[in-house]
Image (cartoon, rainbow, N blue to C red; front, side, top):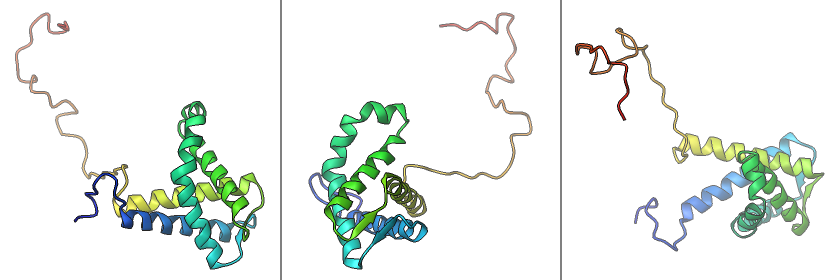
Length: 161
């Protein structure tokens, strides 16, 4: 069976593995760039990744539901705050994972989001499409209407509804 065609109720293991790797990479990058984020061992990092994934599956939808007006008002940027709250919850559960403050959790959430966005764009699994075209506009101007060769009537500027 192709991994892109998953039956309802089945888990796409490769997508789950990709998510784990991206979360781990995000935490690694955030901890190397900030003093407010650190973990004691690789086992702690693995536990953080698994719990973030589990909490994103179970707790995050409930938080989004309760904070839906905030998420809509901030045009989706409130989701980073919700991700930071999930990370603070993971920090409370995992003994070797340390976040200095809410701002550190927000930093980790932002780094994970950017890493995931970049990876999805590079792998082609994103809903964002970037098209680059070479060349300028047509030589006869921007209008390529089929009406350009038709004779003009005197009430041509009337819009019929």
